[in-house]
Length: 280
Ligand SMILES: Nc1ncnc2c1ncn2[C@@H]1O[C@H](COP(=O)(O)OP(=O)(O)O)[C@@H](O)[C@H]1O
Ligand SMILES: CC(C)(COP(=O)(O)O)[C@@H](O)C(=O)O
Image (cartoon, rainbow, N blue to C red; front, side, top):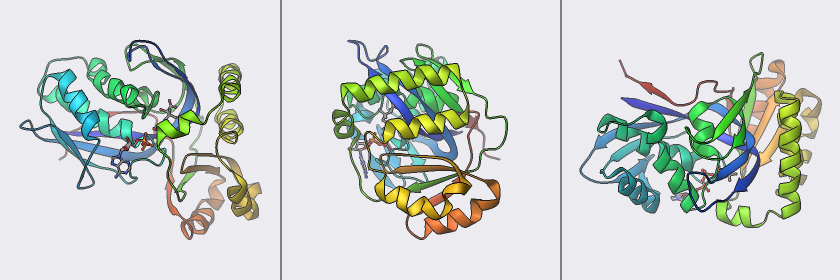
């Protein structure tokens, strides 16, 4: 059994912190892309996550195995590494948590809870677990994991051609979150309310850019994208994740241009979220 989890780029968020990790999470919005982390259960003798041949998230893994009361050792592959803002930490933890379904009776939703709890405890994510579970372009309206939190989805209506690049540098999520002011979160709240009134992919991109420009610098990106600005329908930057929605006819050219500078992928929206596949 292979578990496939889409990567997720949050564009709007404000954390809701309670004394219970299951009612803690973020309200916001984001986009799931057709780039996937895959997870395969290797054994039940020890506890851990091997991501692209390297052991990662050891403390998170111990917390999850503790909650599950089981040892699970999973082998995972992802086209994008941890720490760049593509929700890879949540995807890794979902791979571990959901693997428990192979050895333990539970609902699929409740099997995601340890992943969400670990994200919250270690401050590495608030809305990525529920976002990736359901896929699509989501608006997170109530915090928490699947079964507790609530997401609504924007219907794209057509294929959205996306380009994602990994910008140089790195900043840990807890450090990044500490930089965000009360005013910026008030802005996020207002933008989420407006997005719910006018839920479209255009509005999502516009609002994500407005919010994230209060947190990250856009100077060099705006300059780099200027030759193609009229061919780009929307773009925003979150941590090292640069996401562009481009005119179909310009997809290849803009991809080649950005790929000269950064590791870049052509992709589209994942509409389905987590899936369980039996390899042939
Ligand atoms: N090789 C690695 N590169 C980056 N982060 C790593 C690595 N191994 C473990 N980590 C841990 O992974 C977590 C990354 O979380 P986060 O920044 O939220 O990632 P993402 O943006 O991919 O969701 C941090 O707790 C960090 O300490
Ligand atoms: C923005 C973030 C708090 C962290 O996202 P990442 O950098 O991908 O771990 C996310 O989980 C959210 O709630 O929107």
